[in-house]
Length: 349
Image 1 (cartoon, helix red, strand yellow):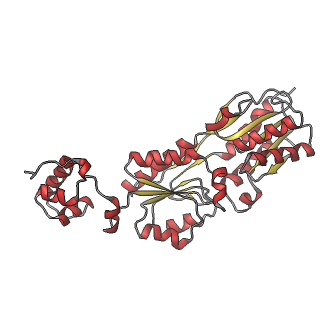
Image 2 (cartoon, rainbow, N blue to C red):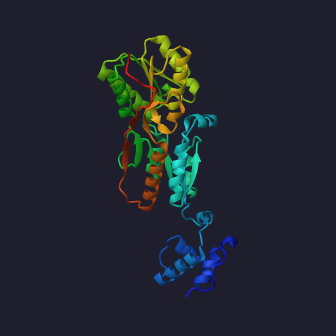
Image 3 (cartoon, rainbow, N blue to C red):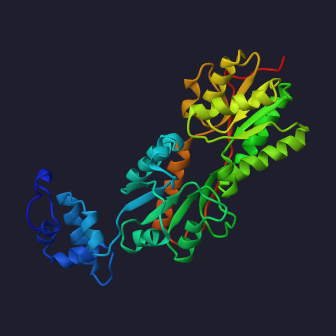
């Protein structure tokens, strides 16, 4: 029989209130909250009934100090400088992860700093986080190697080279680039420019940059096209403007341009207008990327798209599933892009 009456939730129910209502000690309630063994089932049932009746919500920071789970996940997007965050991080990545975390009673920390190995390990060892989702994954990513070696739970939004036993969700960049060029070739375009990720990203083996360039080389070979590309800075519309001017200086006869980012595509269309080109009558523009912003350009942007919200949402669910079932087999998901034809492309004239 549970003792006492439910407290007004606004007054704040404590673990001591639960212990008093269930007729047990505070340490016994603590053991049950942390799923410890050696507690009688009748006692466990009585405490759980008191928790339900009182509407008690465990204080996760207090549990953390006792060595329990933090109920916190981290989303790590390393950037070279904080002022770059706005330009390179898609906001739906954060909101998607936050939504999935909240639905499963986890907090989410969004990290953009360049972590050191010691800092990363200490986040787990001190129970600051239970699991981490990694963005900007390199083919030889040290974070992956370190977390795998120390058996800390993580999920990649991206892919490294060695995927044995690892859980990831990634975008099929190679397929997206090949499909983009095939689509434009089918429309009759042969002189096609390409604005892709920075050369420094490719040299440092960042997955999207490496795989996009591999897809580009495949498309050139498949369709016997001449190469016209620039690896641009990728953080603003201005990068698309400057890159497009360079492409047109090299070949004024371009009839189409493919970009790996919607902001770069917007800059490309602005540069074309500055040169007196009409989009799409004189030059088509096609983007590879996330579709949350494609209708914000004039004309609206034809694109091979993914939803960054859905990708990060699914990655976070994979993380919570991994935490709840540590022996769950690795999940590996490669997301294909979807072609959305809008106003920025048409058949070559």
